[in-house]
Length: 252
Image 1 (cartoon, helix red, strand yellow):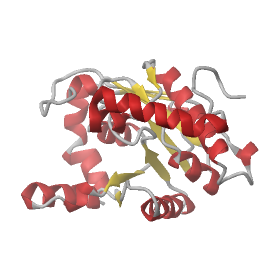
Image 2: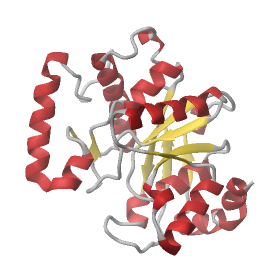
Image 3: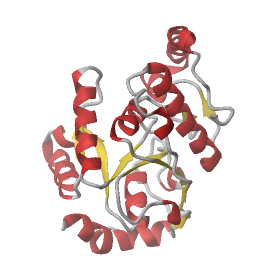
Image 4: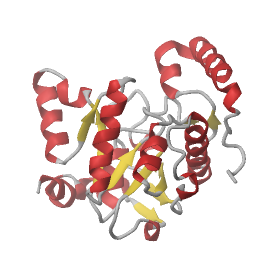
């Protein structure tokens, strides 16, 4: 109930005034059945404008910090995300990653739309960063299509590092579904998961028209350019044997 109240009455009308949003390619989202919506991530309001413009309900996997922050702000965040049906996940690896996969599987098995940000965090500078392979693992194990979605203009409304919101024009651009059924039975392969993830990022790069950066956004946020370069070199060395496909050409 709260999801639709937020969307139609409490928040939605204000968002429409501030963002004058429009959606392109809505026909690419199925009217029923499970699918993953894979979106770029420019600003906090991405998670508001995407559900606003899609008629079906979307469940996002939200970082657990939104549910555990202390104080008044924490209680408000916890109420909002819980009431709107968002699901907390621990973004650390290991068992936390498996728990996130189980949560995503439950959402998809119920025939719902699952919203994910393959970059794992907001872009620190408006560019598109390397995708994490968790999305590929979810798509392959659940056997569902991945629909790329480009959010455009949200970083103008809520600039990086700012808590202010300014009127602008928001566009939600939905691409054609990506079918990975050709990889059936190959889930669990690091090579396949990287190839699937890169294909998703390639589609997002084309939709959003963002510059692509082949490092994880979190690496840049956590340690600055120097650490990001070291992390990129380390990741490249680890994945060299797998011959990962960087999304500069379309996957075959």
